[in-house]
Length: 262
Ligand SMILES: NC(=O)C1=CN([C@@H]2O[C@H](COP(=O)(O)OP(=O)(O)OC[C@H]3O[C@@H](n4cnc5c(N)ncnc54)[C@H](OP(=O)(O)O)[C@@H]3O)[C@@H](O)[C@H]2O)C=CC1
Ligand SMILES: CC(=O)[C@H](N)C(=O)O
Image (tube, rainbow, N blue to C red):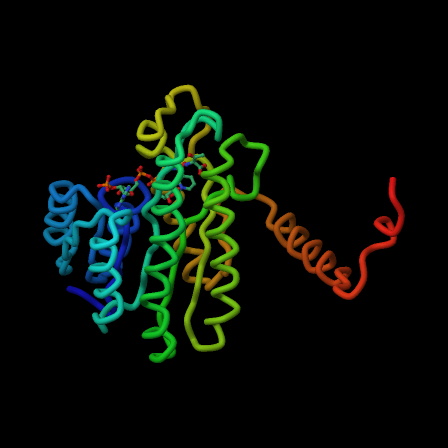
C-alpha cells in the first residue's frame, strides 16, 4: 500500500537509480521512474508493483534531448504528488580531454549537469511554495579529485556538489531539503558503458550498500552524504578550511605578493 508523497527518480532503469526505486518502493512510496530504456523500466515497474503494492509510472526520456527533458520538467512542475526528486541519471567517460570529442563532452555535460540543474529548477519553486520536499543530487568523490584523470566527468560532479550546497543554502530556509550524495566506485554498469573494464578495478562498493547508506544520510537530513568516507572529521576539516580561505579574501586590494614583479 502506498504512503505519503511519490518519488521521481532519473536513471532508474539500472544501477544506483534502480536501487533507489527499490528502496523507496519498500518504504511504500509511489514512483515515477525515468530513463531511456522503456522495456527495462517497465520490467522494474511491474516487479515493484507486484512486490510492494505501490503505483509505479514509467516515463521514458533521454535527458540530453531538450523535448524529452521538457516533459520531465513539466511533470515535476505540475504533479503535486511528487515530493522527492532523485537526480541520479549520469554517465562517465573514459580517457582525458585529448581522447574525448567535443560532442561527447557536450553530451556528458548535458546529462550530468544541465539536465540535473533544469530538473531541480523545475521542482524547486513548487517545493518552496509548499514548504516541503527533497532534492537529492548524485555527485561523486571524483568531483573532489582533479588528480583522478577524469577531468570532464569530475568537473560535472564538482558542479553537482557546489550546486547542491548552494541550493541547500537557498532552499533549506524554505523547508526544502537538498542532499548531495557522493559515492566512490560502485559496482554498476557505468564502467562498462564508459568503456572501462570494471574487473580491473578493486574494491568497488555494492550498490545496495551505497544506497542504504545514502538513505540513512537522507533520513538524517545531511546536506552532503559521502558513504565511502570513513572519518567524517576530514570533511568537516575541508569545509572549515574553505571557510577560513574565504574569510581571507579581501576584494579591494591584491595580496602583497602581487605588488612587485617576480
Ligand atoms: N557507479 C559508480 O561508481 C558511481 C556512480 N556515480 C553516479 O551515480 C549516478 C548513477 O550511476 P550508476 O547507477 O553507476 O550508472 P549506470 O550506468 O548503472 O546507470 C545510469 C542510469 O542513467 C540512465 N541514463 C543514462 N543516460 C541517460 C540519458 N541520456 N537520459 C536518461 N537517462 C539516462 C541509464 O538508463 P538508460 O540507459 O536506460 O537511459 C541508467 O538508468 C551517476 O550520476 C553517476 O555519475 C557516482 C559515483 C560513483
Ligand atoms: C569515475 C567513475 O566513473 C565512477 N562512476 C565514479 O564517479 O567514481
